[in-house]
Image 1 (cartoon, one colour):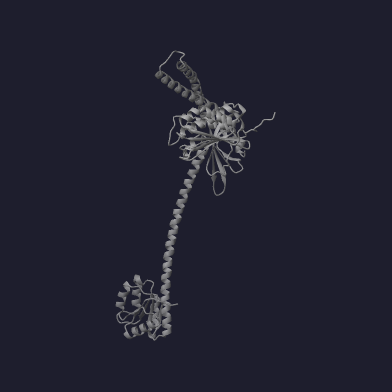
Image 2 (cartoon, helix red, strand yellow):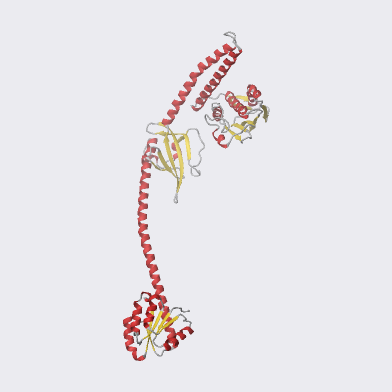
Length: 517
């Protein structure tokens, strides 16, 4: 391995320094600086580092031992290796001085060139190893200091995080324990493993009696809804129209439930938050009863007003002028619209209160569709609306409440004309699929956006975001309730400026065309 390093050579004899410098260069040690004056060499060494200092023992201005001792005290030469050249006669004094100063080696004059070069290379390598070791020690100390600092910081951080986790756990425990809503957790077997005091109070029993019970066997699905598996759901599930039995009071309590899946490294479980909605349900009942009473009481004066205006219009109370007739006719129309709204509100209340009773009979749905179209014939003419029928078979018999289905068809036809504008084409289609009967009303009007379609069958939804209607917003909502009461579904397919297609499907309502007696 090639050895490199700077060598400072000091000897008062010029011949010695020249000879030795030449020898070193021939051996590849070219970075050699020679001095014949030890004082000049010291000045140089103050500002320059080197790997090896070679000094003669006997010199006129300063002895070699003293020179090397002074060089060793210099900060730049702290790790530099030193070699002393001495004659045989001065050997004993040199050895004594070497032990005191701590010189690496002494070499007697005359020297053997091979031994000299070998010692010089060993000395340079020694210096490099010492400096490398010192650097490693410095790095190790720095790393150790950093590790100690990190350890202190880590301990502080762990203490801080432990405190935060403890505080968070205490907050969660406080929320879980003191929450007014019932909180229940269960795993994939749906067996309850934890619950809070509010949940125990809702069920009217203690925690011991509820643990390891199937959660879904303790609640009542009032409308037999199809439930999504909460462990497969991508987002929380909200359940309405549920109730539970309070075992203490032996009463049924209406509830709403939020189900959320929680996953961690170890397990997956579901948190169910149960809310008692008895107060809200009672308020809704009182509100609906008030509206029902109010609308019912409005019917009598409205009917009386309409009848009185009819008497005036048909001349029973005497002749009237044309202007009077127009004004009274407008008043009658306004009262009839108000009566229609009153009746719609009453019907909505009846369906929501569960007080509707369907009177199902066997009838031909195609004939009913034609009757409804005939009833709206004047409206079609006023709007230049073209109506077409598309029946799979001429006679499609169904088992349903004829008057309620008539209300649905009239509403869909009326909406198709009103929202389609002038020169609209309306196609009414009836089909039979197995035991299901399906009716659709398609127009080529302005169409509906996706946002409008989502809220269309909700209560008091009016028109679209582009065009608002002066209607009550109860027609489609009531139609949905009527269809759902027949165990059916209603929906709309629509695109902006491409028209709308309202479809309702009556499940298991279709009958055979002929009845065998």
